Image 1 (cartoon, rainbow, N blue to C red):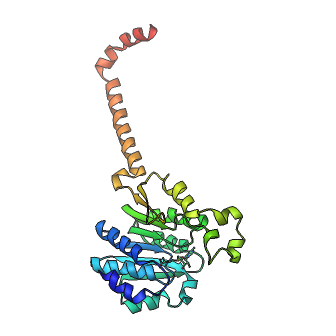
Image 2 (cartoon, rainbow, N blue to C red):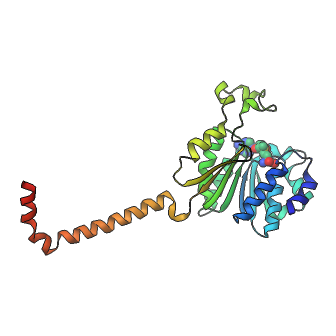
Image 3 (cartoon, rainbow, N blue to C red):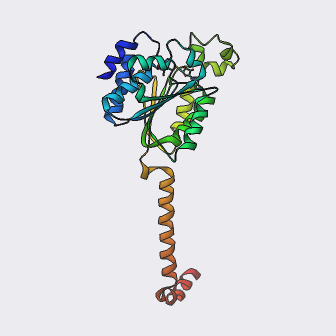
Amino acid sequence: MEIEHTHELIKDVFGMNMKEARLLDDLLKTNDLSEILELGFAHGVSSCYFASTLKDMGKGHLTTIDNTTAKTRNPNIEELLKKTGLEEYVTYYFEAVSYNWRLMKLIEENNGPIFDFCYIDGAHDWNNDGFAFLLVDKLLKPGGIIIFDDYNWSFSRSPSMSQSPRVLAMSKEEQETPQIKKVYDMLVKTHPNYHNFKILNDNSWALAQKKEEEDLFENQVNKLESENRKLRKKQKEIMSSNSWKMTKPLRQLRNKK
Ligand SMILES: C[S@@+](CC[C@H](N)C(=O)[O-])C[C@H]1O[C@@H](n2cnc3c(N)ncnc32)[C@H](O)[C@@H]1O
Protein backbone atom coordinates (compact mmCIF):
# COMPACT_ATOMS: atom_id res chain seq x y z
CA MET A 1 0.00 0.00 0.00
CA GLU A 2 1.31 3.44 -0.95
CA ILE A 3 0.27 4.98 2.41
CA GLU A 4 2.78 2.72 4.23
CA HIS A 5 5.59 4.08 2.07
CA THR A 6 4.38 7.67 2.57
CA HIS A 7 4.15 7.10 6.33
CA GLU A 8 7.88 6.38 6.51
CA LEU A 9 8.58 9.80 4.96
CA ILE A 10 6.16 11.94 7.01
CA LYS A 11 5.67 10.10 10.31
CA ASP A 12 7.38 12.82 12.38
CA VAL A 13 5.13 15.64 11.12
CA PHE A 14 1.98 16.70 13.05
CA GLY A 15 -1.27 15.58 11.44
CA MET A 16 -3.41 12.57 10.60
CA ASN A 17 -2.28 9.31 12.20
CA MET A 18 -1.69 6.01 10.44
CA LYS A 19 -4.82 4.33 11.80
CA GLU A 20 -6.94 7.11 10.26
CA ALA A 21 -4.99 6.98 7.00
CA ARG A 22 -5.70 3.23 6.76
CA LEU A 23 -9.42 3.68 7.52
CA LEU A 24 -9.72 6.33 4.81
CA ASP A 25 -7.63 4.33 2.35
CA ASP A 26 -10.07 1.46 2.77
CA LEU A 27 -13.19 3.66 2.59
CA LEU A 28 -12.06 5.43 -0.59
CA LYS A 29 -11.02 2.25 -2.38
CA THR A 30 -14.08 0.23 -1.33
CA ASN A 31 -16.50 2.94 -2.43
CA ASP A 32 -14.50 4.06 -5.47
CA LEU A 33 -14.26 7.67 -4.26
CA SER A 34 -11.45 9.39 -6.12
CA GLU A 35 -12.36 13.06 -6.53
CA ILE A 36 -11.54 14.40 -3.06
CA LEU A 37 -12.03 17.73 -1.32
CA GLU A 38 -10.24 18.46 1.96
CA LEU A 39 -10.85 21.48 4.21
CA GLY A 40 -7.86 22.10 6.49
CA PHE A 41 -4.52 20.52 5.54
CA ALA A 42 -2.08 22.16 8.06
CA HIS A 43 1.34 20.66 7.07
CA GLY A 44 -0.29 18.45 4.43
CA VAL A 45 0.03 15.10 6.25
CA SER A 46 -3.55 14.02 5.55
CA SER A 47 -3.18 15.40 2.00
CA CYS A 48 -0.17 13.14 1.41
CA TYR A 49 -2.12 10.12 2.65
CA PHE A 50 -5.07 10.96 0.37
CA ALA A 51 -2.67 11.42 -2.56
CA SER A 52 -1.06 8.03 -1.80
CA THR A 53 -4.45 6.34 -1.92
CA LEU A 54 -5.16 8.02 -5.28
CA LYS A 55 -1.79 6.80 -6.57
CA ASP A 56 -2.81 3.24 -5.63
CA MET A 57 -6.21 3.71 -7.26
CA GLY A 58 -4.55 4.99 -10.43
CA LYS A 59 -7.01 7.86 -10.77
CA GLY A 60 -8.54 10.92 -9.13
CA HIS A 61 -7.37 14.18 -7.62
CA LEU A 62 -7.30 15.96 -4.26
CA THR A 63 -8.32 19.61 -3.91
CA THR A 64 -7.34 20.91 -0.50
CA ILE A 65 -7.72 24.31 1.19
CA ASP A 66 -6.23 26.00 4.25
CA ASN A 67 -5.46 29.53 5.46
CA THR A 68 -2.47 31.56 4.29
CA THR A 69 -0.87 30.85 7.70
CA ALA A 70 -0.28 27.26 6.55
CA LYS A 71 2.35 28.55 4.10
CA THR A 72 4.70 29.31 7.01
CA ARG A 73 4.43 25.86 8.59
CA ASN A 74 7.62 23.89 8.76
CA PRO A 75 7.42 21.79 6.68
CA ASN A 76 4.58 23.19 4.60
CA ILE A 77 2.37 21.27 2.18
CA GLU A 78 4.51 22.14 -0.84
CA GLU A 79 7.63 20.68 0.80
CA LEU A 80 5.82 17.58 2.03
CA LEU A 81 4.34 16.83 -1.40
CA LYS A 82 7.75 17.26 -2.98
CA LYS A 83 9.35 14.95 -0.41
CA THR A 84 6.76 12.25 -1.07
CA GLY A 85 6.70 12.80 -4.84
CA LEU A 86 2.92 13.17 -4.83
CA GLU A 87 2.56 16.70 -6.27
CA GLU A 88 0.67 15.60 -9.38
CA TYR A 89 -2.29 14.32 -7.32
CA VAL A 90 -2.93 17.52 -5.37
CA THR A 91 -4.10 21.10 -5.95
CA TYR A 92 -3.76 23.21 -2.81
CA TYR A 93 -5.10 26.66 -2.05
CA PHE A 94 -4.17 29.15 0.66
CA GLU A 95 -7.01 31.52 1.59
CA ALA A 96 -6.76 34.80 3.53
CA VAL A 97 -9.85 34.29 5.70
CA SER A 98 -11.52 30.92 5.14
CA TYR A 99 -11.90 27.95 2.81
CA ASN A 100 -15.45 29.13 2.34
CA TRP A 101 -14.18 31.78 -0.08
CA ARG A 102 -12.52 29.15 -2.28
CA LEU A 103 -15.65 26.99 -2.10
CA MET A 104 -17.63 29.92 -3.51
CA LYS A 105 -15.18 30.07 -6.43
CA LEU A 106 -15.35 26.32 -7.02
CA ILE A 107 -19.15 26.51 -7.13
CA GLU A 108 -18.94 29.44 -9.58
CA GLU A 109 -16.40 27.71 -11.84
CA ASN A 110 -18.13 24.35 -12.02
CA ASN A 111 -21.46 23.51 -13.43
CA GLY A 112 -22.66 21.19 -10.65
CA PRO A 113 -21.09 18.73 -8.22
CA ILE A 114 -17.51 17.55 -8.83
CA PHE A 115 -16.42 15.70 -5.67
CA ASP A 116 -17.02 12.11 -4.45
CA PHE A 117 -15.67 12.67 -0.97
CA CYS A 118 -15.06 15.56 1.42
CA TYR A 119 -12.94 15.50 4.58
CA ILE A 120 -13.61 18.47 6.88
CA ASP A 121 -10.82 19.04 9.41
CA GLY A 122 -10.49 22.81 9.62
CA ALA A 123 -12.05 25.46 11.82
CA HIS A 124 -14.20 23.10 13.93
CA ASP A 125 -16.64 25.91 14.59
CA TRP A 126 -20.29 26.60 13.88
CA ASN A 127 -19.66 29.81 11.90
CA ASN A 128 -17.20 28.37 9.40
CA ASP A 129 -18.22 24.75 9.21
CA GLY A 130 -21.99 25.21 9.32
CA PHE A 131 -21.66 27.35 6.20
CA ALA A 132 -18.96 25.07 4.74
CA PHE A 133 -21.44 22.16 4.85
CA LEU A 134 -23.96 24.15 2.81
CA LEU A 135 -21.27 24.96 0.23
CA VAL A 136 -19.80 21.44 0.16
CA ASP A 137 -23.29 20.07 -0.44
CA LYS A 138 -23.36 22.00 -3.74
CA LEU A 139 -20.06 20.40 -4.80
CA LEU A 140 -20.72 16.82 -3.64
CA LYS A 141 -22.01 14.29 -6.18
CA PRO A 142 -25.07 12.15 -5.36
CA GLY A 143 -23.83 9.08 -3.45
CA GLY A 144 -20.80 11.07 -2.21
CA ILE A 145 -19.56 10.93 1.37
CA ILE A 146 -18.59 13.63 3.90
CA ILE A 147 -16.54 13.04 7.03
CA PHE A 148 -16.29 15.67 9.76
CA ASP A 149 -13.23 15.20 11.97
CA ASP A 150 -13.31 16.08 15.69
CA TYR A 151 -17.01 15.40 16.21
CA ASN A 152 -16.65 15.65 19.98
CA TRP A 153 -13.85 18.23 20.17
CA SER A 154 -14.30 21.62 21.86
CA PHE A 155 -12.06 24.69 22.07
CA SER A 156 -11.89 24.47 25.86
CA ARG A 157 -10.46 20.95 25.66
CA SER A 158 -7.65 21.92 23.28
CA PRO A 159 -4.32 22.37 25.16
CA SER A 160 -2.90 24.41 22.27
CA MET A 161 -5.91 26.69 21.71
CA SER A 162 -7.91 27.03 24.94
CA GLN A 163 -5.83 29.98 26.25
CA SER A 164 -5.45 31.78 22.90
CA PRO A 165 -6.90 35.33 22.63
CA ARG A 166 -9.36 34.13 19.96
CA VAL A 167 -10.79 31.39 22.18
CA LEU A 168 -10.78 33.52 25.35
CA ALA A 169 -12.87 36.09 23.44
CA MET A 170 -15.59 33.44 22.95
CA SER A 171 -18.42 32.97 25.42
CA LYS A 172 -17.89 30.10 27.88
CA GLU A 173 -20.65 28.20 26.08
CA GLU A 174 -18.89 28.60 22.72
CA GLN A 175 -15.61 27.46 24.25
CA GLU A 176 -17.17 24.35 25.78
CA THR A 177 -19.62 23.25 23.08
CA PRO A 178 -18.43 20.61 20.62
CA GLN A 179 -19.34 22.75 17.61
CA ILE A 180 -18.87 20.10 14.91
CA LYS A 181 -21.40 18.00 16.81
CA LYS A 182 -23.87 20.91 16.50
CA VAL A 183 -23.21 21.18 12.74
CA TYR A 184 -23.60 17.44 12.23
CA ASP A 185 -26.59 16.87 14.51
CA MET A 186 -28.52 20.01 13.57
CA LEU A 187 -27.65 20.63 9.92
CA VAL A 188 -26.42 17.37 8.38
CA LYS A 189 -28.68 14.81 10.07
CA THR A 190 -31.79 16.92 9.42
CA HIS A 191 -30.91 17.61 5.78
CA PRO A 192 -33.35 15.79 3.47
CA ASN A 193 -30.57 14.83 1.00
CA TYR A 194 -28.39 12.91 3.48
CA HIS A 195 -28.55 9.45 5.03
CA ASN A 196 -26.31 6.60 6.30
CA PHE A 197 -25.16 8.60 9.33
CA LYS A 198 -22.31 6.95 11.21
CA ILE A 199 -20.02 7.92 14.08
CA LEU A 200 -16.62 6.25 13.59
CA ASN A 201 -13.00 6.24 14.70
CA ASP A 202 -13.62 6.22 18.48
CA ASN A 203 -16.30 8.94 18.29
CA SER A 204 -14.09 11.40 16.43
CA TRP A 205 -15.49 11.09 12.89
CA ALA A 206 -19.04 11.84 11.82
CA LEU A 207 -19.91 10.43 8.40
CA ALA A 208 -22.89 11.17 6.17
CA GLN A 209 -23.73 10.08 2.65
CA LYS A 210 -25.55 12.14 0.06
CA LYS A 211 -28.50 10.24 -1.36
CA GLU A 212 -28.50 8.92 -4.93
CA GLU A 213 -29.83 11.17 -7.69
CA GLU A 214 -33.38 9.73 -7.79
CA ASP A 215 -33.76 10.00 -4.00
CA LEU A 216 -32.67 13.63 -3.67
CA PHE A 217 -35.37 15.81 -2.12
CA GLU A 218 -35.85 18.06 -5.16
CA ASN A 219 -36.15 15.03 -7.47
CA GLN A 220 -38.72 13.41 -5.17
CA VAL A 221 -40.73 16.66 -5.19
CA ASN A 222 -40.49 16.85 -9.01
CA LYS A 223 -41.65 13.23 -9.25
CA LEU A 224 -44.67 13.88 -6.99
CA GLU A 225 -45.53 17.04 -8.94
CA SER A 226 -45.39 15.14 -12.23
CA GLU A 227 -47.66 12.37 -10.81
CA ASN A 228 -49.99 15.05 -9.50
CA ARG A 229 -50.18 16.67 -12.97
CA LYS A 230 -51.00 13.28 -14.55
CA LEU A 231 -53.78 12.66 -12.00
CA ARG A 232 -55.29 16.11 -12.60
CA LYS A 233 -55.30 15.48 -16.35
CA LYS A 234 -57.06 12.14 -15.82
CA GLN A 235 -59.58 13.81 -13.51
CA LYS A 236 -60.31 16.45 -16.19
CA GLU A 237 -60.82 13.73 -18.80
CA ILE A 238 -63.27 11.89 -16.54
CA MET A 239 -65.22 15.05 -15.73
CA SER A 240 -65.66 15.96 -19.38
CA SER A 241 -66.78 12.44 -20.36
CA ASN A 242 -70.39 11.65 -21.32
CA SER A 243 -70.82 9.07 -18.57
CA TRP A 244 -69.81 11.68 -15.94
CA LYS A 245 -72.38 14.13 -17.36
CA MET A 246 -75.11 11.47 -17.53
CA THR A 247 -74.61 10.44 -13.92
CA LYS A 248 -74.73 14.04 -12.63
CA PRO A 249 -78.39 13.74 -11.34
CA LEU A 250 -77.41 10.66 -9.34
CA ARG A 251 -74.57 12.52 -7.66
CA GLN A 252 -76.86 15.47 -6.90
CA LEU A 253 -79.39 13.13 -5.35
CA ARG A 254 -76.71 11.49 -3.21
CA ASN A 255 -75.39 14.88 -2.04
CA LYS A 256 -78.93 15.97 -0.99
CA LYS A 257 -79.19 12.96 1.34
C1 LIG B 1 -6.25 20.04 12.47
S1 LIG B 1 -5.48 20.99 11.23
C2 LIG B 1 -5.62 19.98 9.81
C3 LIG B 1 -4.81 18.73 9.92
C4 LIG B 1 -4.75 17.91 8.65
N1 LIG B 1 -6.07 17.63 8.11
C5 LIG B 1 -4.10 16.58 8.94
O1 LIG B 1 -4.80 15.68 9.45
O2 LIG B 1 -2.90 16.41 8.65
C6 LIG B 1 -6.69 22.24 10.93
C7 LIG B 1 -6.27 23.23 9.85
O3 LIG B 1 -7.42 23.95 9.48
C8 LIG B 1 -7.05 25.25 9.13
N2 LIG B 1 -8.21 26.13 9.24
C9 LIG B 1 -8.93 26.43 10.34
N3 LIG B 1 -9.95 27.24 10.04
C10 LIG B 1 -9.88 27.47 8.69
C11 LIG B 1 -10.66 28.21 7.79
N4 LIG B 1 -11.74 28.88 8.18
N5 LIG B 1 -10.30 28.24 6.48
C12 LIG B 1 -9.20 27.57 6.07
N6 LIG B 1 -8.44 26.79 6.89
C13 LIG B 1 -8.77 26.75 8.19
C14 LIG B 1 -5.94 25.60 10.10
O4 LIG B 1 -5.12 26.61 9.56
C15 LIG B 1 -5.24 24.27 10.29
O5 LIG B 1 -4.10 24.19 9.49
